[in-house]
Length: 166
Ligand code: UDP
Ligand code: MG
Image (tube, rainbow, N blue to C red):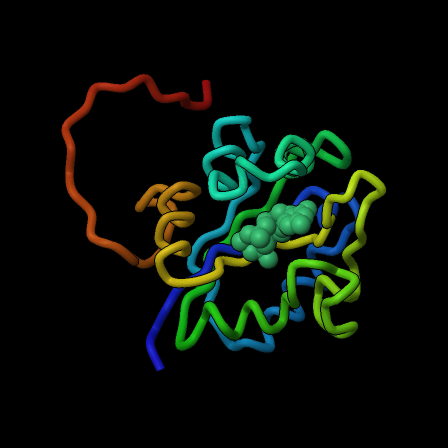
């Protein structure tokens, strides 16, 4: 089995329903390590890039509003889990996409719902395969936000404005 990483998002419905603790406890059954975590206010650009493979779907606009927190709270908790067989272990505990079809004991089966607009409010995101995990982790995290250097990095000399505490 290969050592992998997976991007997990606790979506706005998960946060507003105070499910963070339950989800992280359940995820600990995988014995994977959390190597990065942060609360993010999702911009339209980030949302559309994250779900770019679904842009032709009729539920796309609703999905973007959902992940940006229009219906719950404008926050998601983004985390990177790392360890052997991470992708499959996480997807198993998370359950399948449609909460009505997900195993009742999975996170989505327990806490998800289907809205009348047809969106699956399924509480968490989990990367589908190693290629998607790499794309997603690089989209959500900078190298210095992870405790392990999961992918090759390079040093660039750039002049940028940064915010500091006064
Ligand atoms: N989604 C939806 N209706 C669908 C398919 C997907 O509302 O018919 C939403 C759902 O929130 C899902 C997200 O779009 O988690 C991304 O879809 P994907 O097919 O990548 O499923 P996932 O990888 O999240 O299981
Ligand atoms: Mg997916």
